[in-house]
Length: 250
Image 1 (tube, rainbow, N blue to C red):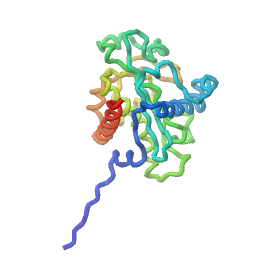
Image 2 (tube, rainbow, N blue to C red):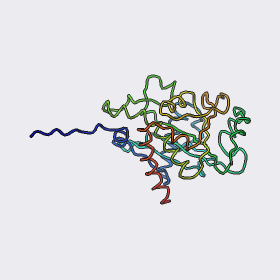
Image 3 (tube, one colour):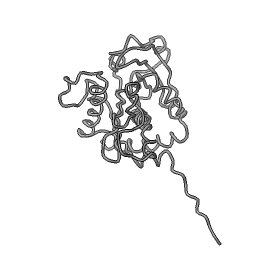
Image 4 (tube, helix red, strand yellow):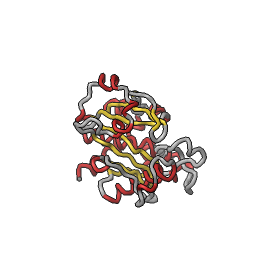
């Protein structure tokens, strides 16, 4: 009797994990890798920060020492993306967007959310290295697919997930650290990208020109997790487990 073996199609989790790993960046080397991605993106490519301020080619600021960082690394050991979570303190203005983009915030909307500062945080410095972005059109967006590396088409299709995986990493950190009232200054396309993934941010202010045109957005961690597409929720759970294991060990 002939039998047929049905092979399972690779999932989003399979494809991403085949080419990338997500790490809680606790070591000096891991954090420096994240800072170097930021230097390449924010200083060299887009000129958001002056290169002369960072002769070591590591872009960092006063929020980094108290922030939680994640790093996404390609299978070649090349750092591909990064993100950080900045927890709020009792001091007003302790989040980057409060200090640098305060005029863009609709304080009435924020006050209506009834938040406690102990649960507030900001996701920021989400960056994808230029080697993993489409060269044509990179002046329009800091996220995209790769053209500059010798990779299969299947592998290239996973590269557009780097920014989403970075956001999932930061979301996992909000849950693990219990800073679940989440703000982010985002370029207009990123909320649209996340919306296609089932993640809906609330706009809480107006556009401001800060490292490009951005606006303040808000979401609660539980809402983000519960509304994710099922395949993305699976990837989130894998990333969450990896970060929690490392974060708990530190």
